[in-house]
Every structure is written in C-alpha cells, then in structure tokens.
Image 1: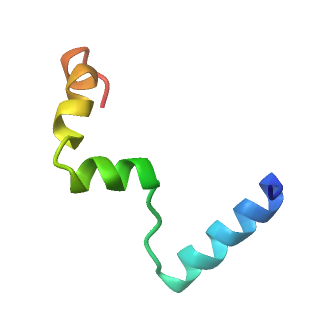
Image 2: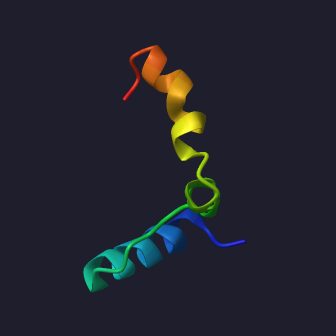
Amino acid sequence: MITRREMLHRIARVRQAGVPIVNYGVLIAHLHGIMERALKPFHEVGIS
C-alpha cells in the first residue's frame, strides 16, 4: 500500500502531464454499458 501523500503526489504528476485518471470500477461499468443504470438512483433523488 502507498500512503495518502504518495497517492496525492502521483495524481499531481499525472494531472500536470495531462493524463486522464479513471476509477477501474467506473471504467468497467462504462465499458459494459451499465453506467447510466448504475447512476439512475442518484438522478432520481436529485444528486448530481
């Protein structure tokens, strides 16, 4: 495991380089076409 500080450092470096960051779970949901369905309950209660 890496520390919070190391993760923030890595995120800062990739942002500076212009590299997109994505959560694997979000990517997999998108690729399988279920992202919209997974987010539907949040849209129904007005959470954006």
